[in-house]
Image (cartoon, rainbow, N blue to C red; front, side, top):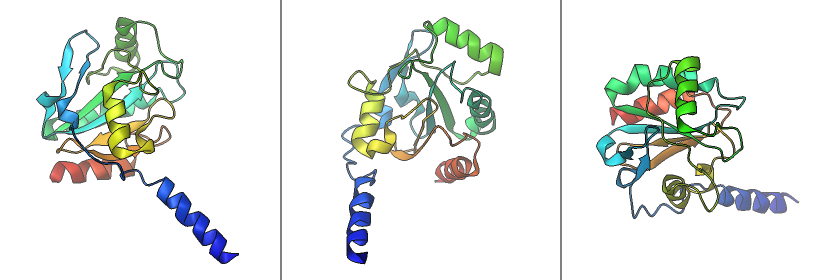
Length: 183
């Protein structure tokens, strides 16, 4: 009986190994994404920065996390952190228009960190950033819901992922950001 439980646990552990596929033919900084104002955001412009990417949605129960994303941005932007909001309707909780999203964020949360255009974050039509993260970090990089977080290190590789339930200003995230900024 103990042997069966051990084998099952080993199988489960290997199935949740999130970095086993890390090939990194491309780095995060080799990619780009359309910004909320329609310009192309070349991520190479943020090379040697730590990046927290969060897929967001205006009508989600986690939407109040925008305020904590702004707190992170305010505290660490001059130390090399980019907070990047990626509005997405992948879970059917986002507005229909980029300008509506921007206005919502500015009026309700006074945010001034960069936002992308409304972007798909899962499935076959996911943006290349999310496909890249999945390919190199595994299933934990795929958003299960809005306000999923992907933390990128200065080398342009996925350092960690966090679920929607993990607040952007949690000790877990802040500690990891500070460690990455120091290295």
